Length: 175
Image (cartoon, rainbow, N blue to C red; front, top):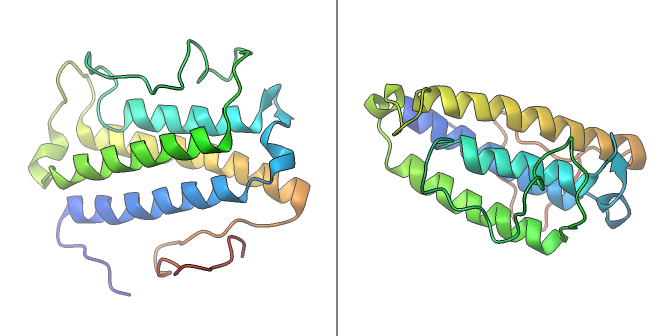
């Protein structure tokens, strides 16, 4: 499989699609009995929500005054240092993931290489800085959730790496 590497935006698009596929696969790999299990005093789903919420806020512009919190959000639901009463279902997380995926892929489709070094309105970071920072943050938390699954279930969620083709329907979620 040959990757399109003719522009930086082409590379970002490809790697973002791979990252989003891996995020969805890891979410799908969390067994029901781990969904509410506490890790560092927070349920597994809250670690996932924190990861997704940060991606939603920070990938495009964390200073966007028009940012709309997702319908499932409440104060501190994304904060891994604060216990909240609200519980999110797998369906709510999946719906939120798909909203973020659509928003981010739409955003990337409007970018060109020149725009990567521009600063979104009111933001002190360039678009490229925000995207790279979210890859770092996203994969830190992905690794944690994968570790929960690997440690408890001894199953390794599938990842794509740089060269693997996107799996077709009916694939195994695990390696």
